[in-house]
Image (cartoon, rainbow, N blue to C red; front, top):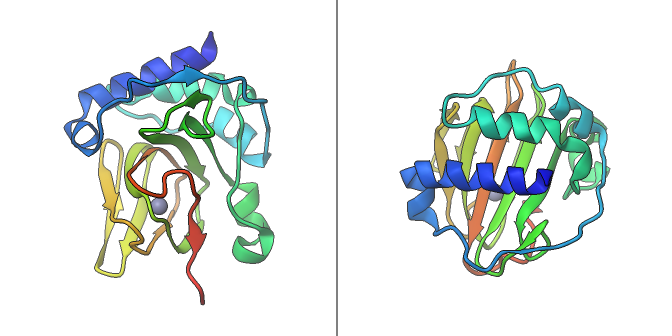
Length: 192
Ligand code: ZN
């Protein structure tokens, strides 16, 4: 089963990274759910993703690319909020979580993609979050500072901490984990 391969590879990435392990334990309550496959414009972009990861991330990248058409791709925002170019070159799916391919009440785990030259504007959410970069890079910003994140690096966001992310000449593929209160809700754009 291909979804099981994604889950197994993500579990291995978590197991081998101390920052992910310290953020949250791998959930022991996973139950497979029959989620419909849902394709969006980014589905094809991810299947053709060209950047390589590292020894730690390349296996998961390849399994993600091979299985883009089987998963439930989503987009949180509306065109009025982020524009059509953003919507055409971004997307994610919930591998683990309250509405994921594998149900869990303990954590949420997303596979998320942004194309090059995109600005993911300021937003926040109640759940705490850690980004893990599988390949590519992005400038991760909070009101406290900014950091260019590359493969194998992580970025933590506190509950309701406003953050944004900008990609430059290359896209970014990430594995994102959520924990704590508000795990069943989505992020919202900051009011302008
Ligand atoms: Zn976030």
